[in-house]
Length: 167
Image 1 (cartoon, rainbow, N blue to C red):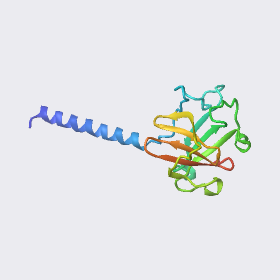
Image 2: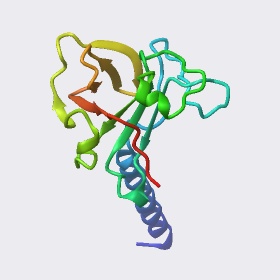
Image 3: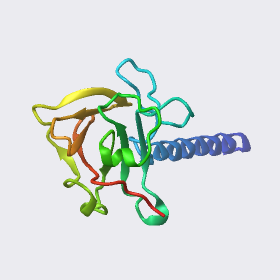
Image 4: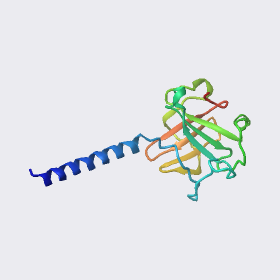
């Protein structure tokens, strides 16, 4: 093989390696964290822009507290309502609710039940219209849990009984 063929082989291998690394990083990301949309397809305010208010925010737990296996979902209540200026005490009075995807049961004593990665959607559950990529948020009258409905399964995230914070 000559120098030209060697360069083609090396370029092909580098391209394949780049595709492999880029593809893996997409799958390593948290599918619940990022911009959420309402039923009309418009982004909902997450308080990143001052003065927009707040509807919904999701974030991964803090790594320095060893909470990075958990995902938090803060949502105004009822879902879709714009909260002009929420504070953590709103979680205690119910106008903003905190739900947790807690596969390692880190917060078991602070939640109203256990995370279920393969839940059944209750028959009384209703779609909120809030969605991110292929995930939709559903609620039921028993608001101890919120349901994230994906293309091939349903997850049940539990409601926190109080604000959870990491120092």
